[in-house]
Image 1: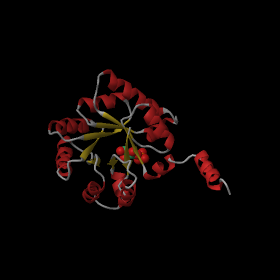
Image 2: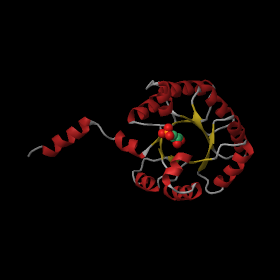
Image 3: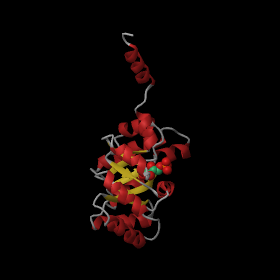
Image 4: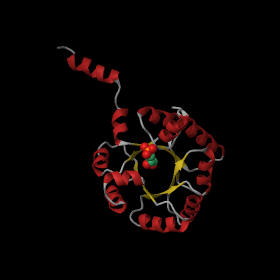
Length: 213
Ligand code: E4P
């Protein structure tokens, strides 16, 4: 499973780039707002730090407007992936961008039929949102189940659209993404750090540190 970092904060990406395990970056309008910079400057900075797919999200609107905006971002760097909202206009824009060989990531996916529509439009990636679905359904396995179902549906037809497990809130989501066969997990900085922790690892280190004392 590839690991992307889900942030627009440059300092976090700089730090994560030194770990040697980051395959790409996803951003969204909330993350860009949190970073306090404009999308173009953030994207340019990220391309200098990470050599992998970098998702830049277009504003929701008519397909033509999203395609025009996408052209602007795609021109910035070959690694740019255009994040497109899961709407009818978004699907139309995805199909257009596919014809131009521009990579896309259809975001805000919460069902198998939505994922199928994205794949049919030629999306490079589709992003099912685990955390938001778990919250909405009050079921800690709802996102997991959705990923499993999309995996089965895609494998039934040899669909090549890659599944990005998104809206990850904790290490358990990373585990569920891997068990469900997601191609990618996009993970917030803080969850990356939490993933490395286990009480028995901490205890084991203490035992080894004190050995022979
Ligand atoms: C995915 O690409 C999104 O940026 C992200 O995972 C959304 O997560 P949230 O539900 O924590 O906002």
